[in-house]
Image (cartoon, rainbow, N blue to C red; front, side):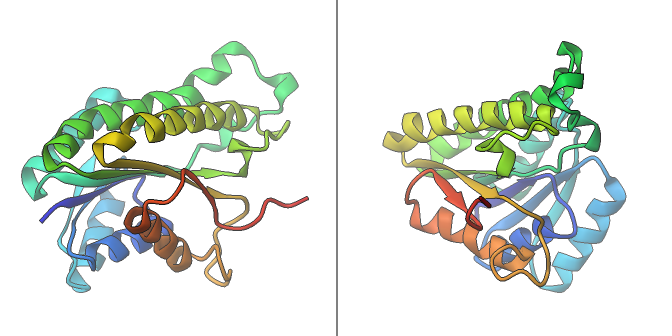
Length: 221
């Protein structure tokens, strides 16, 4: 059994994607700073018959991320699918004219150094398997910068560039990198942007392996 590793585990999209990949015969590794959340999520997944374990790590601490992913692989089995979808902090979203150089340290650590750390941790295992999937989830500012959310706009654009380069560089090795853009809010009542609908979309991106960038909804005009 191979492992689906979710960086940024939470009760909405995170739980839905963990359940979707877990019911497709993958073990589930949940990675988050909040140990109480991890305990609650793993308990809920276990009730659904999904084998899951929580691993505490902070995406702004590369060492803790590497340790968590290595522990997940050793405990649950090799990581075949990595999903990077932590929720950015509110203080990343200053207006562009109020943004100073040091305001970008945390957003870039969150959306660039975090993904790079995770990919470097899981690539050896994917190469040994001969297959793998890297899934990146971002908001609409990744492709349409928003002047009131400068930190995430800049950092998401950098993450998008990194993920696009991975898509091109790793395709010959049967490792598929793809990005899902969610332009608006995730809502249980939304047709295409509910947690369950997005989880199904992410699973299809993994299974079908077609193209790099996908949109949950069209970008608003």
